[in-house]
Image: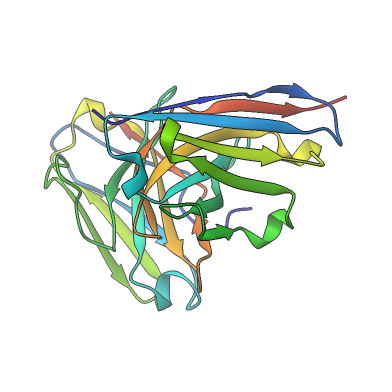
Length: 110
Length: 118
């Protein structure tokens, strides 16, 4: 069982928006501003999409956005495209130098 | 472009040891913290360890209880993970990754599979 809770699946049609949640506790998501999101396509290494709750690395389109409220962080993917279909993982600092991940959400583009 | 290529995975018996390697290219290796993350079948990723620029700053997951040791060789642009006293629940894909600060990883390798079984 992963430290952070994500829904196992999410879906949307091309062009729509979808939001994936990541719920932790006040010891991790709620108490830190170090939430990250990763996109994982099968057979490849995960790709950093969001760091520090809402920042995008260079090259990541602004269709991907992150936010946080209390103990829950969220990743929103707008203007869904076929290539967005992947598993998305959240992670958070959990006090000190400990880092925890969620169990992953499989995003399906219908 | 940034490339990270892991090697050294395979099948090992419980109680055995294995040393994973990660060859880095496309960036100035010595200027980045690096880390290992693993992912057991059907589960989310699990952070294993971080190492600082010159190898003196090492941060480990408490759950591994000292069985795993991270190291690096900046002259060879290489990262290592020495794994001892392996157990069945260490079975996972092991990823090498470049750290962005101490809270995120901005580039990952494709991983190397470690299977612990008799």
